[in-house]
Amino acid sequence: METTATNNDGGSLVPDEAPLLMPRQSFRRWSGPPMRGRTAWHAAFARLIVFLTSGAVTLYGATQMYAIVGQSSATNLQFVLVALFAVTFSWITLSAATALFGFCVVVLRRARREDDRARAEDRKVPAEFVARTAIVMPVYNENPEIVCGMLAGLARELAAKGCARHFEIFVLSDTRDPDILRREASAVGRLRSMGRRGVATYYRKRPSNEGKKAGNVADFVRRWGRRYDYMVVLDADSAMTADAIVALVRAMHAEPRTGLIQTLPRLTGGETLFARLQQFAAAVYGPLHASGLALWHGRDGNYWGHNAIIRVAAFAQCCGLPSLDGAPPFGGPVLSHDFIEAALLRRAGYDVYMRPDIAGSFEGTPPTLAEHAARDRRWAQGNLQHARIVAASGLHWMSRFHLVNGIMSYLASPIWFLFLATGFALSWIAEAVPTDYFPREFALYPTWPQFDARQALSLLGVSLAVLLLPKVLAWAGVMIDPERRRAAGGGLALTLSVLLEVLLSSLLAPVLMLMQSRAVLDVLLGRDSGWGAQQRLAADAPFLTVARQHLGHTALGLALSCAAFNVSVSVWLWLLPVWLGLVIAIPFAFFAARRGAGAAARRFGLFLIAGEKRERSHAPLPKGEAVPG
Image (cartoon, rainbow, N blue to C red; front, side, top):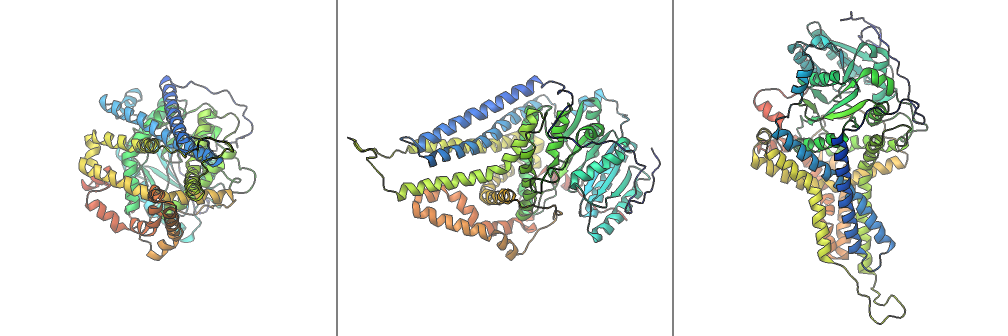
């Protein structure tokens, strides 16, 4: 190993520089070699089935909706309603088709006892590998004790496996807060002292946070990239076990044309009821959805920004991000850089794929609805910014699909809002405007209004089935897996938790719809979200604070309820899931943000995840711990 050098870099302790050229890429021109490699037959077949299934079900739903609202002669507003329904319905049918494939993958994997694909790689790759890997941790005003505690635990695991000399930890600080900087330096100092007996640790402080997180990582690659074969990128609230990291290195070592391998991070460490709901949903539904995505994405996958391994030379060759013309939110630095970096790797012919079967990948989740909304605001801006990049020269069509899919994940909320508003307007018109039974000047018989209630109920049933299918399949997948079923507290606790999660997430959905719609509107109006530090430990907010945050939602819910009741009882009942979720937004958000509510749910055996079962067996959760002084 190289002798560590001490540089005067803002108090940072770093190794000798090993520069690697990382040219800025162009989105307008691509003169590189044509795409190498072909899509595997199973991925191509899965894509065909997923898109055909989603398209067929969407077409059925749209034709049924048209038949319901426009049997005699559809108006322009009714055409708008059908179009909005088709867009929103296509979104959930694609998810359902993916879940169906994921269920097949999970069941077949279990039947063939192939849950741990790393065993096959152990046979292909010698246990003693020679690659050097950087474990990269970019931080920006984060809690240094928690971050360094997690890294200390990982360093001990790697040392215990006897492969510490192949790994180095690099803390890349963009922290601006002076108090956090002092604590950061102290925590890293204690972490570095462990490196004398195991994994070496380095600390780099940038004088400015140019380019935000993407610029932080790019600076590391440009200054020390030649020192490493691979880098494992973590986030301040994420963690990985040594086994997971070693499995990633071996997988990368076995396939020289692979540029990036993404794991499936499992949410963990949540204490509030809101966080526990999120991590339970991720634990039950996430593996199924990710397995389906991994199948039909194939080697044309995506990157989620952390808990992934990257080939450093390929990243330097392909992923130097330019700044977009103009001011934020659509100009300036690329915010959601991860999708773009994956697209640029694929453009150059490197494989990008997901390994949801590798266990030991974790991340935290926002503790409150308010923090979730703040993070979502940044993500909305980053994803909508991709509208300027989706037509970039040379991208693989699947990379363009990932970008469009990310954009749609935020446009779906305002589209759903417009669908509800259009449906309500049509209902009001039907009640308020007198029916013209003789719309033509000369008619022997009246034209009666037509509405097929049976057809409407049938479409409602199909829509609910498509919406709930992923959750039902995920529940079934856990029920047939004894280990996962026990981790969730048993079959009865799992079933009750899933039913409660469906109920609570349904009540939460209208609030999230309005929050995301507001975020999209802010971006379209040119408002920049900035890049503030996340409040990862926020909880137990005062009631008045929560009330101020959700007063508008409650007022809108009350107004919608009164207006719907004014139109008709049937419209009031049709919109009940929407207005009820808005009316109770304040008490719901307040209760969901309480640690006590989360602890109570755990005591009753609700919303349990596998990590908590390990904790009960006195094996620590892979989350931050204090670094010994």
